[in-house]
Length: 450
Ligand SMILES: Cc1ncc(COP(=O)(O)O)c(C=O)c1O
Image (cartoon, rainbow, N blue to C red; front, side, top):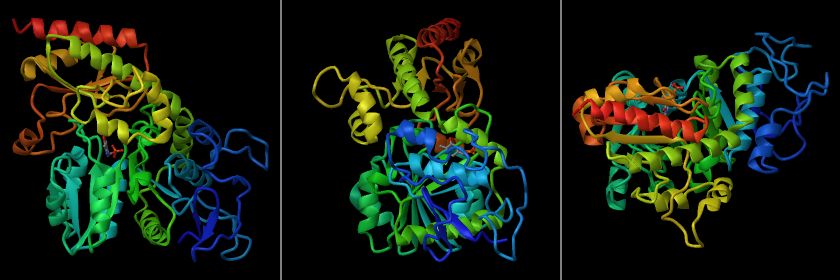
């Protein structure tokens, strides 16, 4: 059941790498990178059906597709290999991630991580940022290292010197794994610098960026030199907390086409694929990504400033604040479309440091202990105490005991994931209501300490 076609952003390419001109009746004649971000989000992969005129794609639930003769079909054989909704969504994603050409979707962000690491083969070495999502850390240490024979090293890629980074790349290093901003302490990694260093090394490792926290709206890692971008689409891209999915996007080149084909083979072989219905939902979500990301950023900035004003808060971590140590790097690494939006927040003509929207994630240290943090988390009225992030509704969580509970305590202490650290995913409700909610919960949580 191997797929006989590969979908790129704006055309279908046969497995020998040549365009076969096949359009599946719905492929745009225009380049998928044509138009602004919002235009691409709404139109690429969502063209009116040539068959019925339907403006919104139909959901194709069929698991199998008719062949006119053996191997002669309309591009689809069996839904694990490819189906129309997945193909459409993958084209949307390739168009949204600037510099992207190939996209693949998976049943979750974690399945995506698994496939990437499996593709490297036993004996390969991975150099990862030390402050990764807990589930990624768990996969790298308990699965890739213990069960699949990979070697994994974690390094503080924010503060390591160029020599330390180069020195950590070995002859068998196949992948450098970046997550930026890191989760949950929102450290910023200089993607352009790490990509340059990786490319200067004889081992030529691929550089992957987990772009989940910023989404393709705020950051374009492929244009900064990364080879692969991954997303937990469960978060901002779908944006409505009702789909579990992951994605990979790669730029166009012979080297990247070969990587893409290997990953696509594993996508089909492992079967960790999203359902047509989930693809349809995620594509609907992606159409408003630009609108939501602006609103998440504006609201987060207001909430971050309110936290900064509060005597009940020890430290606020939001890279969009001018007080954040990497505010200038955050500004410098914005995508072109985000920069246009962010520049409207500039107080004058000079560049950062200044306060600007930078996605919707904030972490802060409440003045108090674990019990104080827990009281905050159970005192909010709008922020729901729950794992995950990136949905339209605001969420709050306790990383040490929730999302990062799988990281050993000693490691958590090194990373600064203390008992009084709280992570907020700021939604798109009215900003004033969110600020009021946070302020009243802080009062309730910290006053009880007295
Ligand atoms: C940054 C990041 N990467 C990857 C994942 C894993 O994604 P999923 O939950 O879709 O498997 C998450 C989940 O929280 C995440 O926050």
